[in-house]
Image 1 (cartoon, helix red, strand yellow):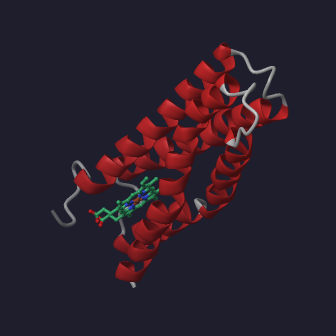
Image 2 (cartoon, rainbow, N blue to C red):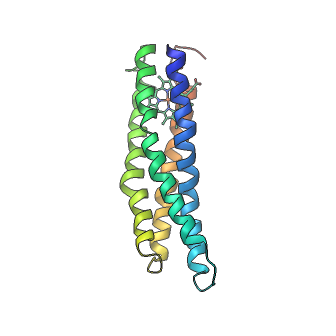
Length: 153
Ligand code: HEM
């Protein structure tokens, strides 16, 4: 059973967190290109921005499976109160908050008024997205290294 729960947990990480990380990272550079090419007749960038935002939003919902199956795996392994896991849960919550409260609204703001987008707004979104990405990297390493854990390697 634990193997099944862990498999769903890791699959959800790959299928949900992966696409959000890539799409979110492409958003700020695509915004810069969209603005640079504003006077070009055929400019696909604004449509691409809409798609990138949709990927981030839809896959963020799918990402809810990550903590659900992570918690079920932890319960099954009896490690729910381990320090490495509690820290991971906190960092996962922080990453989700950065995504929902900063990254997605930042993208929406740009989409709502693309031509009025300031370089400050793009830089801000780039920074928030960077923080979001770093949090995933730290959680993934914690999940694999599991400092202090006595279960497995
Ligand atoms: C509430 C959040 C989470 C909980 C409760 C949780 C829980 C767990 C548990 C209990 C394991 C099994 C560890 C073991 O075999 O001893 C695990 C493995 C794993 N988790 Fe999470 N997790 C969470 C979030 C995340 C996130 C956000 C990521 C990545 C972005 C992630 C990536 C992984 C990976 C890659 C493994 C496999 C590690 C391995 O077997 O070497 N987890 N998780």
